[in-house]
Image 1 (spheres, rainbow, N blue to C red):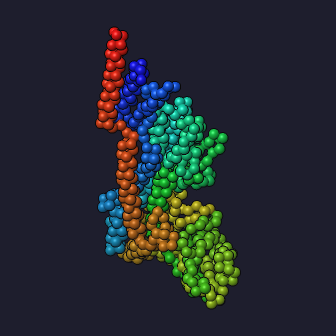
Image 2 (cartoon, rainbow, N blue to C red):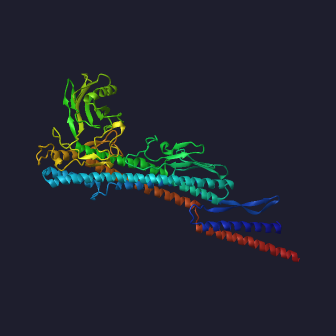
Image 3 (cartoon, rainbow, N blue to C red):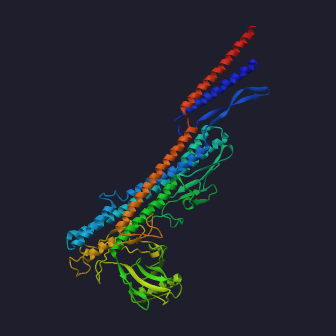
Length: 613
């Protein structure tokens, strides 16, 4: 090797070590920079026609683990989802008040029960009567507040969805711009790659992101549900039609029935997709917000509606027992029946007990699952023209459900008769009706009392299902003390009721404590086994379930944060900057630089010596 070759090698070594020094200084200066990946200068041997010719820097590369990066994004989405769920379930649990506090819903339910007990003990006491009205009014207002608080939580989720969708659009535009710059440099600029990855990581917090690599360093993005987010140069555009939220605002894939906002994705061809209806986002903050707005809070509202409806009907509905009539059947007096009231017929068909629920309607058809009993046969019939007007409809629906000739339906005045057809395989074993009292006093005297009413339409609560719309939906927001009920009415069933009569106070107290069946919703009861208990029992169950949901969500969030922290730590070890390691590398570079410089010095001395000869 000639001295000139040695000099060239040393010069290339000096240039290489200078480049490596620059990379190390960049790593150290960005040790705390979010999204920065540790870099390294790649040195390769220079080969010329006659042999090697020193060293050169081929490029600067990022040092990171792509598998850990993928795991980190997955866990980031999971953490976004878990954090939202923990936050919102905690808010829902707080809606019902701290157990034992004076403002807790359970406390106010207890106060109402205590007031009824005091009235039962001393019906003629004006203070006891006034206390029942006061406790009933306070309870209704507290249920109203709980409903309003639930809708406030839903409104917050609606607003958060709007903000997150806007953020998704911003991030996708930034990713598209960064991707174009990456392509222009053939993916050789680590800074551009870091910038793009950082925005993808932020996007992963909002939605579940799947990254697919393309040529020239390009990428495409989609969700795990198959929704395209970005193809080279073409980000999807998302919109959210935020709406005001009420207790009756629900999501529906039918835009004409939808009462809340939805996320619409428009692709480059102009095609639009309802992202929520298609289930294309499965994790991240947005998935959590959708679940909270459309499931958790809706379930909480439905539970509260069940509570309000049962409270109202416990006070206002009387059970009208059927009497044996005809050859084999029962007569039910339907006078006073209101839309939503139910006639229950018990029968055995082929040796199997069956329940037939006849729901009074004025208009429209009966929606599915109109009663809490999942195993009954539901029939809707209009009693607007009396019992006679309902006979034909009931008969045709019984024939459709059990076969022609199994049951016979007839009427006399307001009395409806349900008979079996005389076959041993079919027997009617009982019948009764739950009928809503419309006034405090009547003839004959009735202990049922319309203590609560539906404030919005100005109607009593009867459980109406007219036109397929349930009066129970959102009733917790509308339940109120009936202003037509006076303190005297709490005892007086007629003008001749003695002031100290215990009949009505006792009936109201017993009705409040009586077991009733509640429609299954939100983990309370199941379609095969609906929850049965008193109104107070059901309220306690709601509080327990909401508290359990909040606790479970908090544990999920804590566990998810531990998992993410672990992945972040492993990723940082692989891709992050360790100042200690960089300083160790710096010592090696310094030594290499000194050695190359010393070789150049030796070459110079040898050349000087040669020139003096």
